[in-house]
Image (tube, rainbow, N blue to C red; front, side, top):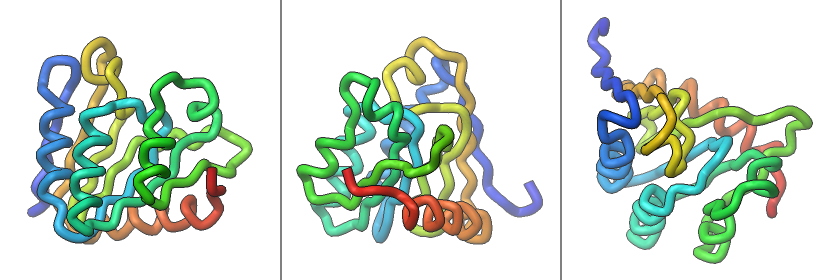
Length: 150
């Protein structure tokens, strides 16, 4: 659209998780994320693989979901030395965003979870555009700066 490559996925039918993992594995410099809920082992595994290859991985998770979800990935990320934080906003931080190499944005209703992939009707947009990625990265930086270490 207007010169911007755009991909659309609808779960549970379109293999959203596989595409997200493919893009994460292609990261060369950075992966930043904002996540309301993050319990997907396969997506976390891909991020940890890239971090092991010196790709910067950092993120913020919604505090209430960290406390109430079983299987959240925050502890795994922290133990691996990633800079992951908990949102410090008194309201829900409801983002579901991954920014890759300052040029790809993954966004939509898709939580990074098993249910998002297998049971819920979710949408995911993947935008290949540095200008759009910059806007999302500014939002990431704002939330990240206010977030708390776990």
